[in-house]
Image (cartoon, rainbow, N blue to C red; front, side, top):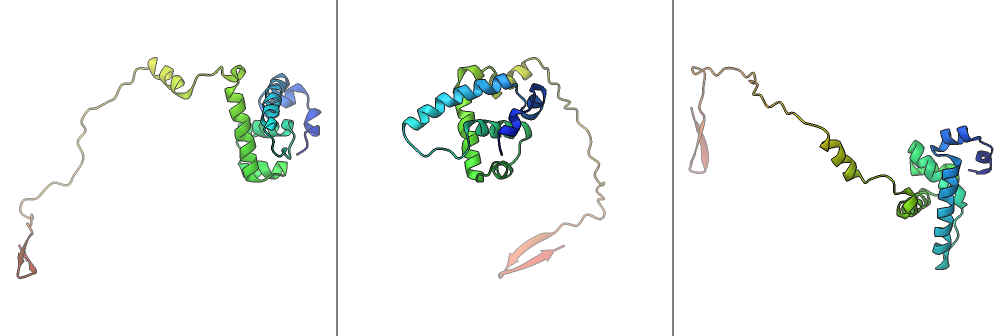
Length: 153
């Protein structure tokens, strides 16, 4: 997928497509550029996609929650490479202090339950069952004699 056709979008359309403003996209891109320079100091093969396209792919994944297969086909890469790119970008952005504004999942759950009172109705309710008839009750006993089982009624 070519990033050039997304450069022509106005701010409102860009927000509808990705879920973030262009300024936030550029801020994320600056953070990722620094991380990519650090990554390639160790050496390694360059990525087929540009950093802008990889970030756009990640934002589309977050926005639409498409499968890695569909995103990979859209950007002409394999499903595994799509996963690796998204995972790398997520890890870099999570480690950055600019994007750690939200509390963790446990903190959000604890805040939710601190303000709520939960009431559980534990009253006993009778279960409808057929009534036992003492006249038609049959007892079955099994007795083991000479390796044979006999039923006594």
